[in-house]
Image (tube, rainbow, N blue to C red):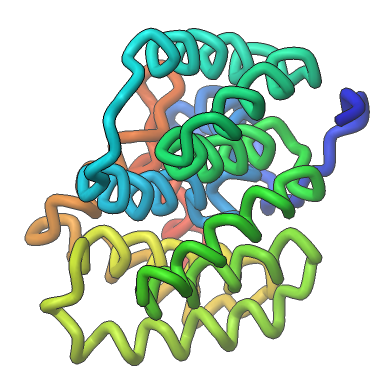
Length: 245
């Protein structure tokens, strides 16, 4: 893999500077740092849950030295995306299928977060293949929608996200249901922002804040992204104010 120098980013609606806006500067920094991750619907966090579920079910013996080495290499990789560390990690994944299950989704997450979604495609494909093999239909749908987003096919991605949310309404016994429901709801709101659908976007941002009161996964998601004292909740509250204004 060649190191990509030019980041591919998704535009997030800019925040206008106003003397009456509290923490405006911090919100701007937050959007600059995490805008792309927000729009992608936090792919990596969702993928990590799928991988964790598969990983804990594995009965293969573990070579702990390789596992520890893989973790060190991955930590270096996410600090600075480069082909050298990725090649080392891929060598370990080739020797240990469990490591491939564990890190493919995380690699995709890192590439997307650093603005290189096009390079994440083969790793997303791996997650899709395992989702099919393990019969995780809802996780498979979520990951396929991520593919559409990386291809900038937002209209079709939005339709798929809507279809998935409708299915999840009646499937509360799905493994890790709360996490999937939370992440897809966030995805709906961000796609609506991307497509300029202000009314449904407002409704979904408000639903996210209400859902967080009962859904621990949603609360964790809101707290996960943070820049100083500003987190995703701050951004959502500001966005709601914009849409209501």
